[in-house]
Image (cartoon, rainbow, N blue to C red; front, side, top):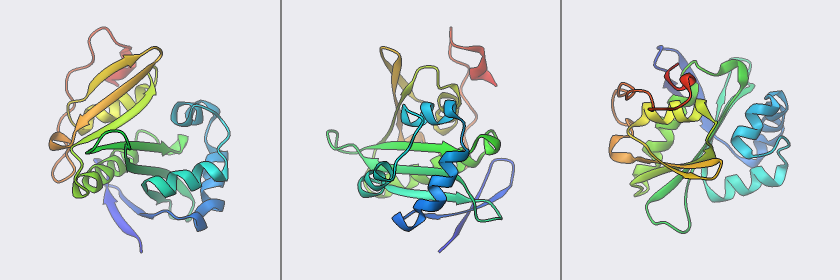
Length: 183
């Protein structure tokens, strides 16, 4: 069953829970993503069926669909096994659909899901240079970032994740960060 999400710009996006039956659509989606975007999300440029099987087994996952039924985004939220109440946020948006609010709308949905499952924090582990994700999570709330070499462990308290109400304005840009963060 499809659901609708509204982006900050007012666009309506169809999305639904993903399943292994969606592998051909998800595979086509990943093949259309740039190598840079895949590497930012997955840490590599080739996504295999077993990666999606693992994702679907360990988390709730959703696909966003274009009017032509092509997948334009994949989001997931699943509990981190080692930390009760902390949910991992996974998000991939097709290159030509980025900066349109699709990722933010799905991230808000993932936050609401995590909260409904007893979660108190969203976590995103990413490269420190992943400015699109860093900017997006600032729109969800007030993240904390812990640097681990070239990576960041970003934590967003679900009490401020904006999943049940209007999107909070983005906090001021990161001090000393990349100027793209304020875009």
